Length: 228
Image (cartoon, rainbow, N blue to C red; front, side, top):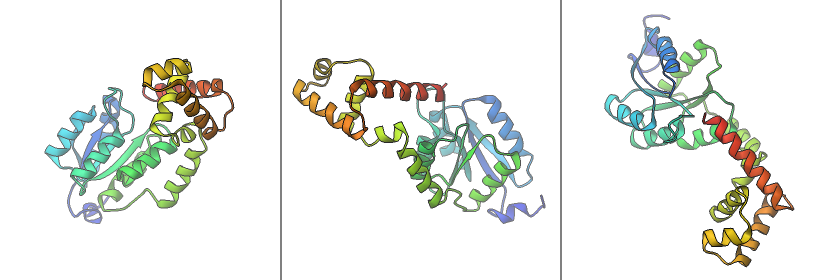
């Protein structure tokens, strides 16, 4: 890298913020960044709350944000949305272990400039940071559109089409609730619940509530594994 490398991005040293709940990951990415002559890590955090405080204080050029945070109090996409709302000058690069079309679409909607897997080569990550610092948009419209199409074909995608009321009933079906129990829980008439169940099964292309219960269980298991 030449001494003028910084000039290809923002004309000065690129200041980078790191968010990841695993210290060893932050340390590894930090070492890669700090080894470059045109960039440095100015702050890091392991939780969403600490991240927002640090970004407010240090005002980095690029925030590299892990999607999944183990504290159960937020995630990298939510942090990205907040950063982009309060500090639109800061470019956000989403870093994740999983190829997840839902997260890709959410990242684009949150204003992220890029979405990369942790498995990429170190030089590719560095170049991604350098590019978004210079104003590049690595999340192309075609990638987002294709990601959305793929997501809509998944179980999670079909469930996302449910209304909030239908989604709550779907979750209760997954927990084994009967129509009467759902009615009591949601303060609805049992006949109303029956109509909701019929509608949501139709939207999901299912004929029996046992299919909905099995789907809810699979979705819950996948979410649990992602957050571990």
